[in-house]
Length: 558
Image (tube, rainbow, N blue to C red):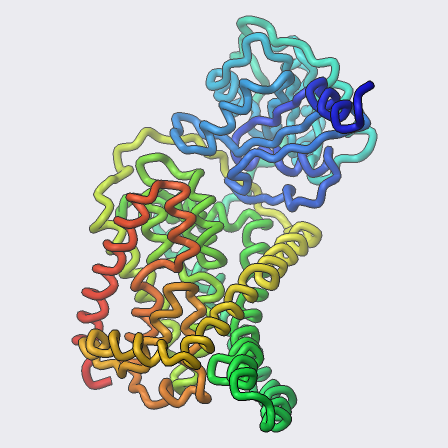
């Protein structure tokens, strides 16, 4: 007699495996969500949103469904390699092709894939953007290939269409040996809208302005909200707690309400970091779900090539403004010859949400919130220069890669809500606990006297930048996490308030760029090797110190 675990293992082995494969933005992930019913945010309208395979079991159908990253022609990225490797493991292949671009994309896809012996189903997506010719088109392709061909709007897959597709998967058969696709009908239905972003000259400037607005507006809103919340927290939470803890034990008072206390500094961190995380996540989700993010990256392709990257490498760089760790994972979609350059730019120039919140807080405490914009521009400019100097590889002569233009459309509120909810959950369950741990460590170091010793050791080095020794605390803790800079708000920010504009700018710049945080470096080491992570850290430290010295010389008198 088999136990339940053994029966389940046998059932897993007997499942039919269906692999979804197609170009980026074809609708594979939306199809995966619609078939599985899992709310995984897979209806995203953003190129390269899937960087790992995802799978689920449709138990009622005895079917394992596998979603793969979007593939590219003549591409050597890890995501394309992963998709092609997964293809070899599947029993049935579901080709996902946009019906509006089938005349171009279907022949390219068939020439790229090895489908010998595979059972195949073709799904023509974006059926909501095609005319009445779509069925004639599907019938023609069905006769040419000898397989089931269906059409659907993957974002709104009804139960009847879902059942039809699953039945087609279960009854799939191999393609004809040598299909002739020359007589396919012309592309049908709507084509992606043409905008000024596609203009050869105006497009890149408009894309750059859109990027600036994408980050400037949510950051400004977050700054206003945090500035309104902080005095309320002082008046209604911290002041009463400090008054009631006068007679508590010294170590407990230090741990909870001291300069680095869990409640004092922890609450301060939340007030300045959470609004940035919330507003940035909403802004990025809207941009991704509307398809605008892909248009921006396409427009900036030529500019990115000047620093050894290309337009699609900009997607991980932009993701870094949310979280550097996520961005390093997304760099798997980069070409092998540009991935290291992309990671280098991420760790130096992509200010994560927590770093943005901490920087805003410090600039505000010093009475100079206007420094944030030049700080952000400097990060991006020096980051691009750093990438160009240390990574000589160029994609100027790379083979052209086919990438179909995405549709611009109204974002799905459901998908945006899922994205924002996921970011907030990550902030509350991962980011805040780590910062609270930093508070505990800082309190322990302060209570033991080690913090005073570490500060004294680093003080002579900071004198190169005309910074006081006490500023070393913020730089040390920013190595652990980028919002570790917030420890300088201890003592009601007296140290910060005593600094001049140039000193304040250099302090935040050094803390931001001296090295990537430890979590990011650990992720880089796992993805690209320990040797590369160590080289990355040493090169970044050298660039940071030299550029900070030059900036200090240029800013004399401020």
